[in-house]
Structure formats: structure tokens, C-alpha cells
Image (cartoon, rainbow, N blue to C red; front, side, top):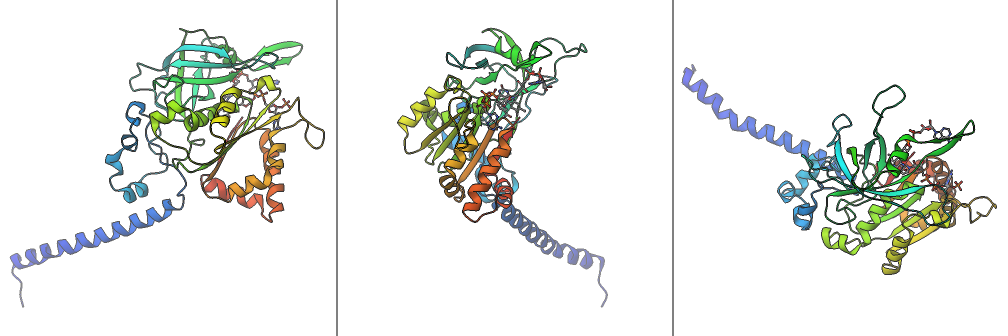
Length: 375
Ligand SMILES: Cc1cc2nc3c(=O)[nH]c(=O)nc-3n(C[C@H](O)[C@H](O)[C@H](O)COP(=O)(O)OP(=O)(O)OC[C@H]3O[C@@H](n4cnc5c(N)ncnc54)[C@H](O)[C@@H]3O)c2cc1C
Ligand SMILES: NC(=O)c1ccc[n+]([C@@H]2O[C@H](COP(=O)([O-])OP(=O)(O)OC[C@H]3O[C@@H](n4cnc5c(N)ncnc54)[C@H](OP(=O)(O)O)[C@@H]3O)[C@@H](O)[C@H]2O)c1
């Protein structure tokens, strides 16, 4: 039987819906696979772009337009996809203005640590960041080769709302680097520049950078924090987000989990933001624990300096019970030197429970529950 040209064309057209349907099925299958893959990491939070004014109402903060089909959104988006990164690159930095610069130490402390706040208003685009991110600072002047100083990174110590809750400032906690070389005191370039700034000074800031130290979105997460010295910076932001009444009012993220801060400092006078944390602990005794390791005033069981890993070991069983809960996240920040000690303490604690830390740690990391930023 011979077909006319018209019949052949019509016959071909009749197959189009079948072909479209076939492609639709393939696409749906692919999306489902992606959802399963991303669903594995269910604890990773979805952090929305830092728009403090909008974030006042949680519905807006959750960017409802994009979240209309939650299953599809989580399938397509990587965790923290909306967190701003590198809005201002080192070659075209933002110019902030210092509003405050005061000592974060008490009398008798070792060294110099400053709490420094910058006004970020007037940026186009806005310089927005979220808790746990860092920024780059470009010190004024030139290096020995006559080139501009390379940027140094600093953990942001404020929440996205800033210390004044207006949403247009950023604070840092900076230790001035000082060491002796050939009988001479050497001052670190950028840390000295920052520690000596005065209100009104203009400073080149790049960033924000980093997604390693972001908080989970879930209000019932448990947060274990291990900090040495200025490594407390991101933890200060977390604790303000969790326990500072005006913060809670702003973001309406009502933290319901357990937070446990381990803080290492050489002397009591070096404990940073200690009064704030003690205050939060007294107001929220069910939600916050605060354990200090004061290396030059306390001894560990071996008679050596008390470090945070010694405190971790003391509380190993409780910490491990918390880690067994998939809602628990662990954050480390500060001296790189503390990492082997923490690992050792965790390994000892794990083996007491018949667990192998060398297997467990990569799993925690893969699940987005082990967050470390050390230097
Ligand atoms: C992600 C991240 C976040 C950070 N956050 C913070 C923070 O919140 N607060 C903070 O204070 N710092 C923080 N730092 C460290 C910060 O970036 C700088 O490295 C630090 O301030 C020193 O910079 P500087 O320009 O003052 O020192 P530089 O002038 O760059 O001098 C540093 C160099 O001095 C030499 N040096 C240092 N110590 C000695 C020594 N004892 N003996 C001999 N040589 C030595 C080394 O060569 C070293 O590279 C962070 C680092 C990173 C990577
Ligand atoms: N995101 C980041 O990467 C980040 C953020 C902030 C700061 N930092 C860096 O972290 C460091 C913090 O230094 P700081 O000067 O602010 O701190 P600090 O006030 O000197 O306190 C550090 C504390 O850690 C103790 N410590 C020393 N070695 C240790 C080890 N191996 N394990 C555990 N604890 C140890 C110190 O004890 P003793 O001195 O008594 O031995 C002291 O008690 C700086 O190098 C800073 O640049 C990094």
C-alpha cells in the first residue's frame, strides 16, 4: 500500500507526543536519582542569601519563589548554593569604614587581640555574608617588592545582622602576630595594620569567602564548638545567632538544640567574649555548655598544659553520645596544632565505644557534620 506525502507527514507528527513523553520520563527519572543523591546529605543546611532586611520574616528568608517545589529545589541545588561568595574580589575590593576597634582582652592577658567593626554600607552590590564565613583584608602600603600586600583571611566574628543588628557591619577578632627573630621583634603586616586602625579609617575588604563553617539550618541541631584563641571568631557569631535576644527576634530561627563550646586560651584574661558566653549560659542553661581549657593556669592529668583536647577527652563519652545523633555538627577553629590532639582524643574516646575514629571522621565530614578551619 502506497502512502501519500501528506500521510507520511501526518504519521510523523502523530509520533511527536510519544517522543516528548519519552523524554519527559527520562528527565523525571534523572531528577529522582539526583534527589536521592542529594537526599543522602539531609543534614546539610540550605542557607539563603544574606538579605537581613528581608530575613526579618522567615518566609521571605526562605526565598519562597524558588522553594515552591521543595523536592525539585533540593534536587537541583547544591547545599549552601545561595550563600554569597567572592562578591568583592581582591583586585576590586570593597572599601569599608572602621566604626570601632577595642581590646578583646582583660588586664594581665598575653599579647594584643582587638575586636574591630567595619561599616559595609553603600556597596553596589551589597557586601553580604553569613555566619561562619571569612573575609580578606588588604593592608595599606606595599610589600618589600613594592607590590600591594596580598590579602590575609579573617573569620567574621559577627552575624549577618552585625553587632548593632542593622545588617550593614562586619566584625573581626584579630590577634596581632608578634615574634622574635635575631633579637628583634617582628610584627605581622596585616594583623598589626588591623589592630592599629582608628574609627573613620578606610579599609579594603574582599569576600566573603568560605562555606566550610556554615551553620545547619535545622533549629534542633546540636553544635559542638572547639576553639583556640581567635578561632573563637566564628563561634561568637554562632552563639549570638543562637542566644542573643535581638538576633532571635530578627531572624526568628529559634535554636532548640544543644550547643557546647570548648574554648582554649593561655590565661583567664585571654578568654575572648567570656562574659557574653557566661551570660548566655545563665539564660539558656539547658541549651548551652561552656568548657574552658586555660593552658597556663590549669594542668591536664599528665601535669602538662591544659588544652582543649584534654577537655574533649574528659567529656569523651558525652561527646560521642552526641555525635551518634545525626543532628550533631562539630566545628573546629584556631591553631592547626590542635587538630592532631583532637583526633587523638576522639580516637581514644571512639575505641572505648568499640568504634574506629579513622573510619568515623571521614564519614562525619562526608555527611557535612565535621567542619574544620585551622591555621
Ligand atoms: C581562614 C582563615 C581565617 C583566619 N582568621 C583569623 C582570625 O579570625 N583572627 C586572626 O587573628 N587571624 C586569623 N587568621 C590568620 C590571618 O589570616 C593571618 O595569617 C595573621 O593575622 C598573620 O598575618 P600578618 O599579615 O599579620 O602576618 P605576616 O606579616 O604575613 O607574617 C606571617 C609570617 O610570619 C612568619 N612567622 C609567623 N610566626 C613566626 C614565628 N613565630 N617565627 C618565625 N616566623 C614566623 C611566617 O613566615 C608567617 O607566614 C586566619 C587565617 C585563615 C586562613
Ligand atoms: N579560621 C581560621 O583558620 C582561624 C581563625 C582565627 C584564628 N586563626 C589562627 O588561630 C591561631 C589562634 O591563636 P591566638 O593567638 O588567637 O590564640 P591564643 O590566645 O594564643 O590561644 C591559643 C591557645 O591554644 C593553645 N595551644 C597551643 N598549642 C596547642 C595545641 N597543639 N593544641 C591545642 N591547644 C594549643 C595555647 O596554649 P599555650 O600557648 O599556652 O601553649 C593557647 O591556650 C592564630 O594562629 C590565628 O591566626 C585561624
